[in-house]
Image 1: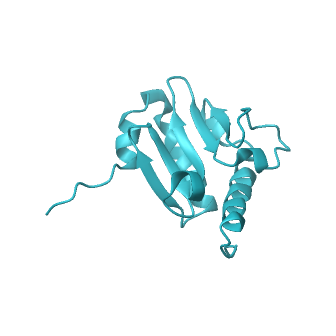
Image 2: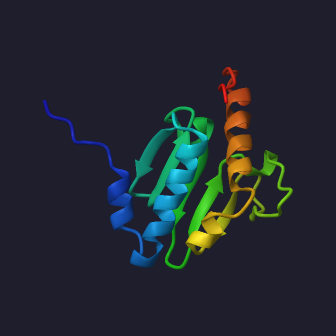
Length: 134
């Protein structure tokens, strides 16, 4: 019995506006710089990729990349719990927050790596996982 391959990041990239594809690629690279062992799950129906300490979106995911027509959201599932000292996070939901990334320059903003590091630590703590060694 053959199984179909899970959706790939490349497929998500194909659904992304051409001018935003470099932004999506850079955001993924940024996440991998902070967490080389991230668990990536692409959900084409949601047009997004989740990154987490495991494959479960809402409980193990810490961040997501969601391309729109004119920007890319770098989202944080538990963003309300993060220290937003650089005032980058937007949103008013109970937990989720996001940053609108419109260019490669936006993807290099100081504070993005810090937010990703915080988000990973928050998920590991919440799930009782040991902290990763830096």
